[in-house]
Image 1 (cartoon, rainbow, N blue to C red):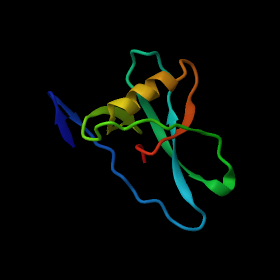
Image 2: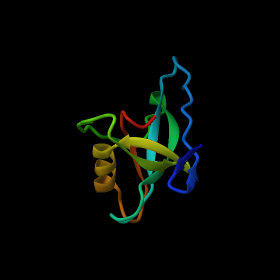
Image 3: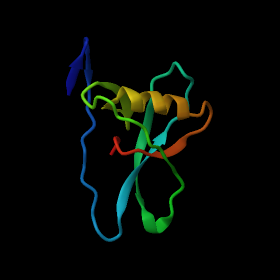
Image 4: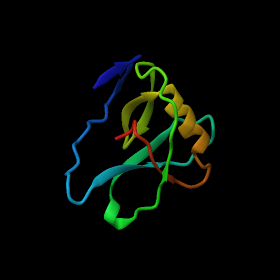
Length: 105
């Protein structure tokens, strides 16, 4: 846990996926929300053999040390400012969206 201000935040813990076969990867279910709401979602394990439905995004990381929080599975994950901005732009207001991005595992 990490203290941010006066709040205690539960950080996301990375768990290694089984490899190979089949090749597994994580897809971010980006929860809906308006532009001003916090970014949140859930990570799901996908298998290429299952042909999961998702969009892949590509963006410039910039400074990988310049991070901001998003909330994944109720836990804090630090991502670059550019990724958070991209997620904010790509998020739908009324339905979830499945995305693959290289900086959220």
